[in-house]
Image (cartoon, rainbow, N blue to C red):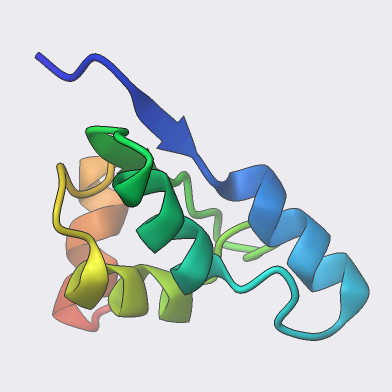
Length: 83
């Protein structure tokens, strides 16, 4: 059982509002793992107002702890490239 999984949706919202890559979602995810969290949580939405599909694909390649806790149907679509 995961003891701590950190949701990074709000961090992505802040980045999107700024219109640039600050804060850097990938760096944040790496830092969260380094600080001891056992998972990274994202909840992608079709309108991508939080996490973007591209973020999910990029995070998949760097997250070493438990990968995402999110809607499994949408995750499959993103990772399979059908979304």
